[in-house]
Image (cartoon, each protein chain N blue to C red):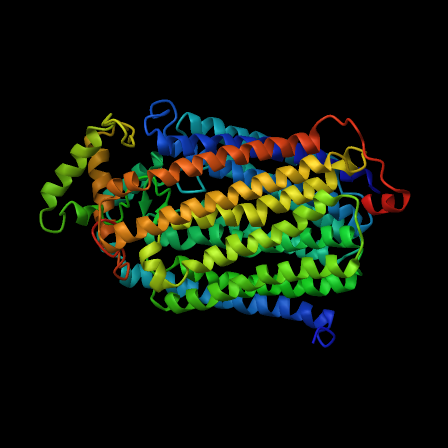
Length: 448
Length: 150
């Protein structure tokens, strides 16, 4: 680590991992309610637990991006972060708002729009913290060396902030509400967040492979170009049945196919660079996560997304467990694994250690990735059966849910395994150091 | 081919392509906005009570169990067409009574069945919510869902 202010990333990563645990606890509770319907039905009904599960996810991923930005921007710009004090204020406001949201949910206070349930004051605080962050990193980039990685990262973060403004608009016309709601929800995860993802992966690949920056950056442009070219109009696949014009049917279909390309390109990019470099980086766990992330993102966001994004298929599969299957693998593959890759790479440096406990970290990779893959399969089977019974045969929703109970048991099991993997991960990156691995001298420069 | 694509060409594709598709996205967004206001929804019947009903829907986070026009938590039935499912088209008074009665008797406490919380809605709130669901059922969704089951 060359710059003092990179240390700012540490508290962000710790806060992110703490919220990751909150998300997982809520997820396991929600999975339990699926198989024991009366569980917690008075104290914390399913809708409250579900909004904690999804909101905590979004907030911890954002905390991860903020921390990663504070870590990588000094190295990219070759200068310290503009203001450490602002970064601490931002963290304080953001964590306060996140905790405020979780507590207010438990008391039934929320705005009740899916994923945008945060009460107004929380939304405002999140936006304020976001603006402080943007000011801080933009000033740093403007005053320092401008690399493609930092510029693409900034475009992604600015885009996320701008499209978040639509969270404040809630018309009484439900169809209009949905039209703009997707401008936050879709444009984030299938648009601007992909820029953040590609920039963070590019940074990791530069550090882990040592391949010439020029080559990596050229392909970074290609990938993020594909992301926005496909992702903006890809919103079309959400515009099939909400009162929008029918031209979205073919726009949604065409651009959904294109949406697979940036993810596929990221897989090729990562594997090609690692193969080309031939270098054996001592942080093998970071390498594993960095390669696993685009692969699982390709399956979760790409393949599972494409599976039901044609209007002819979506007419039957829309809003069934097929969507839940896709949502879980897409978020895990693209954004959860991305952050975990970055933490794995950065935390040893932040803690002043050589890569250590990497075996444990790699075990956590396989446990989490395996259980998430299994969860995706179970929900996919459940969804296919549900689609047939409900949409083709016209059976009653609640009757169908009893028929697919087995899959909900399997899903709960994979959720519990996932939590075990996550606990191992947290222990591996933040736990006490016993046998610290001595890195060979030549590798030390690569881990800084 | 990799050699022919220069870094500045890649950069121009990114900025140019993104800007081009952003403009198209905005234009189609405006067009869809107008289409919703003028064609697919009936704004003349979007009364105060429908708007209040939407707030009742949001205040109780119904979307985090149910789905509405296919979006939501998939834990409880689709409600975009619940008005139709309850026969509201043929017998609006009967559907209203049945929907209100259903919400009043929650939670059912039936063993092995998912429980809907008791939200203690007032008569007025119940009517507003039913108005909202009735209005929602008339949005032109191009034939979705495929059948009454939602």
